[in-house]
Every structure is written in structure tokens, then in C-alpha cells.
Image 1: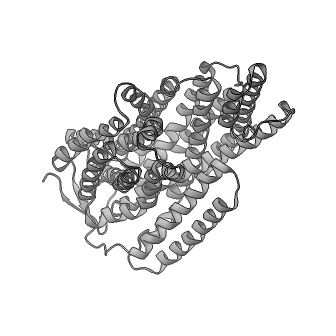
Image 2: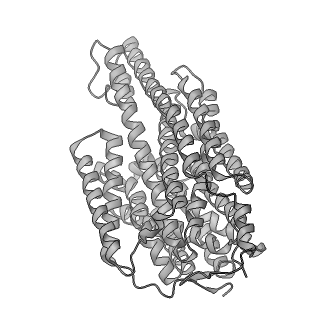
Image 3: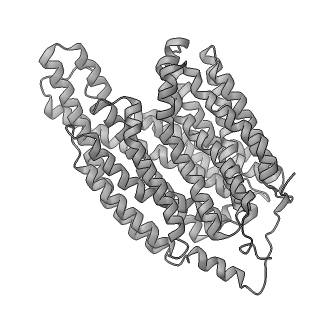
Amino acid sequence: MQESSLRATKREWIGLAVLALPSMLVTMDLTLLHLAVPQMSADLNPSSSQLLWITDIYGFLIAGFLVTMGTLGDRVGRRLLLMLGAGAFGVASVLTAYAETPEMLILTRAVLGVAGACLAPSTLSLIRNMFPSPTQRTTAVTIWSTSFMLGGALGPVVGGVLLEYFWWGSVFLLAVPVMVLLLALGPFLLPEYRNPQGARVDLISSLLSLIAVLAVIYGLKEVAKYGLEPVPLVAILVGAAVGYVFVRRQRTLAHPLLNLSLFTNRAFSASLSTLLLTVMFLMGIQFVIAQFLQSVLELSPLDAGLWLLPAVISGMVAALAASGIVAKVRPAYVFGAGMILAAVGFMVLWGVSADSGPGVVMLASILMFAGLAPVSALGIDMIVGAAPPEQAGPAAAISETSNEFGGALGIAVVGSIGTTVYRSSMADSYPDGVPAGADDTLAGALEAAARMPGVAGEALAAAARDAFAKGLQVNSFVAMPLMLLMALGVAFLLRQVKPAAHEEETSATAEQVVPATGGTEVSTIR
């Protein structure tokens, strides 16, 4: 029977819902701690360095272990790794919620990061096997992708409500019932898959990938915070050098941690590049918009989250609609149309000022999410679909690592542009002597303004908010033409990729079946 002629049943669609829930929780967990930091800091009194480790170690370890876990799942069983990750995530969530010292909180957040790295590639690679039909797989991957967006949108809202009535640790207990549900239903709804020809995971390669990813992402995050300082630049260079050694090692191994032949597939490489750039623009601008709503328009985190919720909903609706359209229309056209729509959103955001209301920001965000969310979701589907079934785990890990790099790069680039414009504007608009720290960040300026008397403080705060808004305008001005250039580039690179329905029809009428090499579906129900 042809792989593409196998249609998913009700069991697979219910299994997809079970897989989408932990994916949503992984994203929510990235935002929940930031909301809980004030209460947590008052309770545990961490030092400044401890607070940095508490907030960053979760995301760092997720990014660092994705490639290793994606390959490990193919070797030991994707469902097994998912179950182990879910169990560890649930236990670590409880320990995080009841942490009594900063050291304990750092440790439990580290465990959450490693467990989270088990979840994302396992869920996506299982979807690759559960939905062999290209059209159904596109819909399934889109639903899975939108669960991440929903988690990012619900994090500030749900977290804000919980923190209003409960202690800071309550936000982490949200994961427990979801992981219990996954552990209870997973063995009955999810197939097991492993590659019986796979050798043991190369520990040296795993260590090299971990160092490379952590060093580069750490450097990018530090650039976003402090600019082009020597330490983050050295970290990025070290990460790039270790990454080069990692790639060279993979070429010499009989069973590499990452099969570099995946990158020779044009659809895979083009989709991966598109995904990286799309996430970079989306996450970078979203990062600045969140600060604009809270610091310039003085909205609470909960109110800011509610104003951004329509944008996330528009992105989810657009992604689901695009998954149906791409069955009949070439992906290149769908990608290009989405980027053009996002460019319109950046044009709207270009007109935002310190005096604008949140409605203008919401409109711009709706257009950007509606344009870029389908590109992101369909890009992930093309990355996983271009890989053979037995390499779905590494392909899923690569797509998730690209997401992490794109987000960190976007925040670093957009943050650096915004900071440069902010400092220049403050020097021009507040020439009578800016208090120490006020010319570096908006938060520093607002803090300094609060200590200044009357009119002087109000003038400093107004100048700082206006300077930050100008940074957002410049970022939008830069992003708009780049988005149009990306639309042309992706339309050219993916012009030969056929619609999913055409791919499915061609495969179903093929005269000879070439079975997947090495992969084995061990069980459907166990």
C-alpha cells in the first residue's frame, strides 16, 4: 500500500490533540516565569546572577538538546522518549512550583528544559508517521504549530489570572494535568516508531551540538541586552567554530547524529531558511511590541496579552486556512502572499507613535500574524515532509532548532536596531543632560524620571517613550522591504514544489513502491 494512500483515522486525530497539548505547554512555560519573577524574587530573594540562570536556563537547554533528542527518539523509540519527557516535565513542574531556594529553582528549570527538548521533536516526528497522507499531514502539522502560538498567547493571560489569586508557583502546576493525560492516553493513541538500524548516539557529537547551540544563542541574547560587547561576540564565534567541528565530524561517522544529506534536498533547505527568517521577523517585532504596550502605553502584562490575543487568533485561522489552500496551490505562492500581507502589517506599524493607542498596534499585529503564521506552519510541514520517515526525528529537531535560532536572532537584531535609534533620539531630544542609565534603556529612563521632580521627570519620560517608539518605526521600515524581497526569493526557490494534492495523487498512481529504509512502526496500540 502506498504511504500517501493511507488515510488517518479518528484515532490519529485524537492522538494529535493529545500531542498538541504538551507542545502548547512548552511555549507557555517560556512566558510564565517572566510574569512570576516579581513574586518569586520577593519570596526566594535570588541574586542577580541566579535570577538570570532561573529565567534563561530553560530555553537554553531546550535549544541545546533538540538535535540530540530528535536522533535519540529514532533510536530508542519516539513514543518512549515522549513518555519519558512528559513524566520528567510533570515531576519537574511540581518541584519548580514548590522550590524553596534559588538553587533548587535553577535545577528544576534545567530539568524542565531537558524534558521539553524531548517533547517537541518527538511530537512532530510522530505526526510524520501518524499522517502519511501529504494533505492530512499538512493539516496536522498546522494544528500542531498553532498550538505553540496559542501557548504563547495564553501564557500572559492565564498566568496573570493565576498570579492575581495564587502564589507564584501555581503557574507551573498547569503542566501537571496535561502531562498526566499524555501519559494515560499516549500508549493507546500513539504508534511507536524506532529505527532498528540506528547505532548508539555519538556522545561527542551530542556535546558539540550542545556547546554550539548554547554559545550562539547565549551570545545573541546578550547582544539583545547589552549590544555588541566583546563577551557575547566571542560566545557567538566560539559557537560557530564548535558548530563547524560538529559538521566535520558528522561527515566522518557511519551513523551521524545529524544526517547532512537532508540539506541537499532543495525543498528542505529553502523551507528551513524561510522558517528561520520568518521566526526572526515575527519574534523580534513581537518582543518590541510587548515592551511598547507595557512601557510606552503603560498597559499591564495581562492587558497587553489581551490586546495581542486577536493577532494570535488571526494567525491560527490563517494557518489553518492556508493548510487547505496549499493542497491545490503551489506552496511558493502561499508563502509569497503571506509575506506580502506581513509587509502591509509592518507598513501599518511604521506609523505607530508614542501617542498611538493599542488599536493600531493590534491591527498591525493581526496583519503580521495572519501573513507569517501560515509561512511558519507550512515551512515546518515541508521540512518534515521532505525528510524520509526514518529521519523525521532529526528533521523535526532541525526545524525546532531553527525556531530557537530565529527567535534569538530576531530579538538580538531588532533589539540592537531599537537601542541604537533610542540612544540617538535621546541625545537629540533630551540634550540638557540625560541621567545615568536613562540613555541606554526605556526602563532606565522611566526609573530615573520617577525620581526627578515635576516637569523634568515628565519631560524625560515623554522623551524616552517617544525615542522607543521611533525605534519601533525604524524596525518596521527596515522589515517591510526585506519581507517583500523574501516573498520574491521564496517564490523562486520553491517554484517547483507541487501542491500536496498533486504529490499525493502522483504517489498513489506510481507503478512501483519504494519502501522506507530502516524505519519500523513497532506498534499501533500497545
